[in-house]
Image 1 (cartoon, one colour):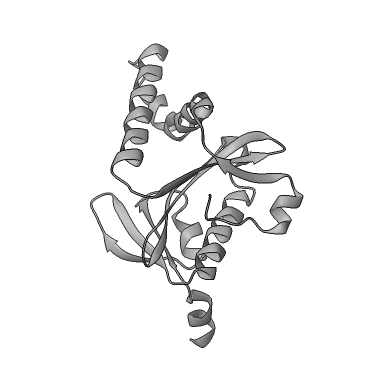
Image 2: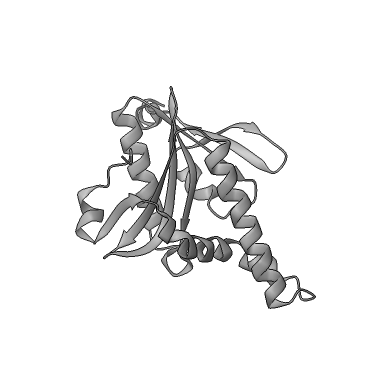
Length: 176
């Protein structure tokens, strides 16, 4: 069971979560490729076949890591009217709900769906009395969104920031 409850407003728009399955591999590979498109565009000396092979290899490595190195991850596909549009991976830990990955199709980015999904993760964690944690690349376009949603940096790693949003972050903001 996916530990994230969608708010009625998203459900009314035809947004749903379901468990990822093997039939989703082509969609998930395409979705992953969209996150590497800008980087691959800089590699003019690579053929399209080279780029496609790289994406398949990197996606397989990421997928393997998520499934073998991380325990208790819930792998969800986000659908709109029955069509896959995103992935949402969360892990339940003793004291936190970890946002492992959220990726939307390129045409769905920047319209508020990602914010709404993260807000649903935050609300679901709060109902369980849990903080929300995540790792994000230092130069990710999503970093301002995470900060706006109340995430603060705990640890700065080489290329990643480890961030957390305490379950009572809204109360802490209003008390300040």
